[in-house]
Length: 144
Image (spheres, rainbow, N blue to C red):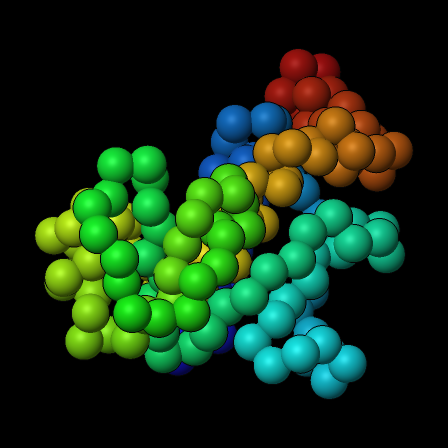
């Protein structure tokens, strides 16, 4: 189910990007890489790693936006998209974390948010010759 949610989120990210930027970013491929540690992921663009992180299925990432109060039991980490302090927690602590002021998100949201951040950051590099041609073709159809 997590994979299905992630795929849906990625479709939404690409669609929103196309609406905002005027062109559809390249297709996103998801592959299992047994060389990576468990729960780790990498985001590549044109074969080069532009981001990496950890997404623990079945757990929640409690992100401290800067004003959370107290500590949470779990695995301390850093939010991969924005570099904020965070903790991987079990679902039983989810409500407590929200009360303490943490932003709590599921694993698929962590990956999707990171991807969205990187697509925005590298938007100019995603616009290549093929995207230029598609945009010109669309303009010539709409304004012959």
